[in-house]
Structures are given as C-alpha cells and as structure tokens.
Amino acid sequence: EVLMGEGDKNKLNAAFNKIETKNHLYIIAYTLLFLIVFSFMFITFILEGRSFVWESDGYTQHLKALMYIRKYYSEAVASGSFPSYDFNLGFGGNVFTTLTYYGFFDPINQLSILVPFKYTDYLYSFLVALRVYLSGLSFIFMCSYFGKRRLYSIIGALVYISTSYVFFWGIKHPFFLNPMIYLPVLVVGLDLILRKKKPYIFIFGISLSALSGFYFLYMMTIMLFLYANVRFMELYKCSEQKIKEYVWSFLRVFAMYILGISLVAIVLLPHIMAFLDSNRVGNIEDYYGFFDLKYLKFMLSLFYAKAQNYGFTISPLVFFTLIIAFFKYQKSR
Image: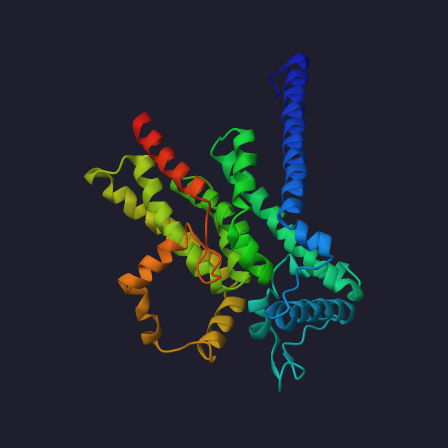
C-alpha cells in the first residue's frame, strides 16, 4: 500500500466497496427468498395461528427447558452467581449435565435473555425459524468458500433447508437443526487444514458443536472423516508416495479436533458421563439390528419415501441430480 499512488489506492478502495456491496445484496437476496420459501413451507401454521411447539416433547421438554434457561441466565447475570445444582430439577439435579442436551450452552438459546419471560413461547417459534435461516446461511458460506456461483449457492441453500428433516425433526426438536448450521462450517474448516491453512475455523466449529452436546457431534465426526479421505485424494492425487502426507494430514486434523474438544471438555465430559449413567443407554445387543440386511434396506428406503414417520426423506430430484453431477465431474477430470 505504501508503494501505491493515490489513484491506485482509490481504485483499490472502490473495488473493495463494490465487493462489499455485492455481498450485502447477496445476503439480502437470500433473506428475501428465505422468507418466501419458509412462509410457503409453514403456511398451515400461519393460517391456523399455531406455534412450532410440539404438543408432546415440545411442550413437556423443549419449551420448559428454554424457559428454565432464560430464567437461569437472567438470575445469574443479575446476581453474579452460577449455581450448578438445583433441587427444582426433579428431586434435585445437576443443572449443566441435565440441560446440556436441551441447549443450555447453545448461543442461540442464550438469546432468550433478551426477551421478556411472558413471550418465551413466541421466542421458541422464532428460534426455530432463526436456526433454519442460519442453516441456509451456513450452506452459502461453504459454497462461497468453494467458489460456487452465487445464484446456485442460494438455490442450493433453499433446497438444503427444505428437506423433510426440517419439517419433521426440526420442528419437533429445535436443537436437531444445529448440525445443519455447524456441518458446512466444519467442512470449510477441515478443508483449510487439508490445504495447510489456518485451523481456527475448524477448532471453533468443533468447540461450538461440542458445547451443544455430543448427540450430533459424533455423527458429524463420522461424516467429516469420510469427507476428509475423499478430499485428500482429490487434492493430492493420492499414491504410494503420498502415504506419508496422508498420515501427517490425518494427525493435523486429529490434533485440531482434540484441541477443539479440549477447550470445552469441562462441559462435554460430564455430560457424556451423565448420559452413560442414564436409563437411556441400553445393552449393546439392542443395536445389532443396524447390521441386519433388512434393516439396512429399510434405512435406504427412507431416502426416497416417507416410512413410519421417520422423516428422513430427500427429494428424488436431488438424488438423481447428485448422480448426474458425479458423472459430469468424472467426465471433466
């Protein structure tokens, strides 16, 4: 910049301002389209004047947990005291291990402190919509990182938030939407490490995911491991000479993963220990059906047809689009 003339500096500033303006328009366009798509997706709720509070777990667990979290943080900020045990939780229970599952450390839930207590039910529905919005925004962030065209990124984001997973699980259990926000960020962070760039995004993403509970963290970890192997072979054209590089890449990612976990281990480990000591954990024999061929066939069927209200379906159009994109990519190589 010192070597630049005044005219060059003005051109550079103008170029940055132009890029910033385009980014703003990019986000505004996504926001407007999101409002249209989201309203269309949930128009029944709007016309019937209903909230997103499910009459079962939504009312008996999630709404009341949000009310408790709001009350806890308000009193903690006012008093400067953060009690870890509360006799109002059943016959008495640890606040952190009991409520981590319900998003006690989730930054989105902590927004509840800004809203009057009597409006918590409205806040509950707003936070569902906010999580869906942030999921699309996170997807756009990932697309921007990989250099995808903005129009396609917005379309992809709208498809991403329009799956039956959002309809079924996202409304019933709002924190089930959190991995949709975290996973694209983690993919970007992981890719940066594989390309020997700074690991801060990955570390931050792991820590934030762990703060929200291990329930989805281990699932995203499996997906990231699969992605890392495919991406490494694409970046380095994996061969026998690249085995050493592969091992070092794995160790770098693993070290950053452990660092991210370690930063919030004081929250994560007690939560895992409490879960393992709960009635929710059955015998390992209960999970042998996962390897049964009939069970695997049933799981595959969920991708194209709704089965027994599991709500895992994806659009057949998306499925065939992925196949076409794969063969087109292979042809271009």
